[in-house]
Image (cartoon, rainbow, N blue to C red; front, side):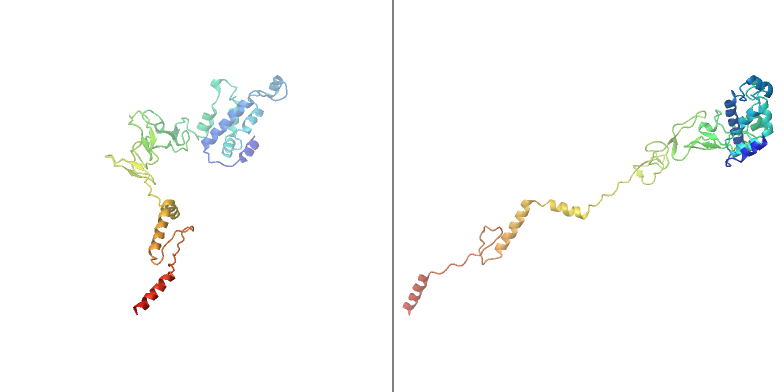
Length: 312
């Protein structure tokens, strides 16, 4: 028997379990295997003959080995506890843990986890070496019903309250940061803490009851007499348009009519600046021609010459 238990103790890796947790693990494994082997027998086919020669199957060594062999399922701490208390467990098994009358059965947890090893407290709501009661409120609720007692039932337990999210305090009766008390409560009521709005760093209530703004938010409106206020995201400055967009936009605002007027103005200015020539419309768009000077009539030249000589 010792060889088997020593072998079992070598399997698996050590885990951060207390002796009380190891004992509870062993208890679960034994109860599981007792149920599995309850209706089995020695396997010879003649149960009456076997029991007359080998004794009762319920308390046989064969069943005991099958019951404890895989009770710890390779857990090192559990296997170590089993090896340490091997002889006492063997005696306990012979008393018929599931076959003796109910009043004669010896409770495994009380026998080994509480009394023999002194690893656990009989009261599951106690902790520490002296099994001190866990903290409660006036209604005897552990940690005000808003948390759990650390190490409850374990002589290695610390016993402090491990509060649920949103709660704090020695007895989990206060709201933690980023939470607020939903309503005023009496001494007999559980606290009800609600999470602040995402924009509040801390708060005293719902919307508009912030006590400081989260990063990326700023105070909105006036601050109330109790110091609370609302928060908002700051208004971003207007984004300037890219230079390319401005050029395109200005080009789109110029109409064809304005382009024609602009061209006409340039055309008239060029005409006024050329007094020696007379602009004439041409079939060619935008072209300007000069009109040639008139050719003098020869007859007028002869008459002028004759008149000049008569005067002489």
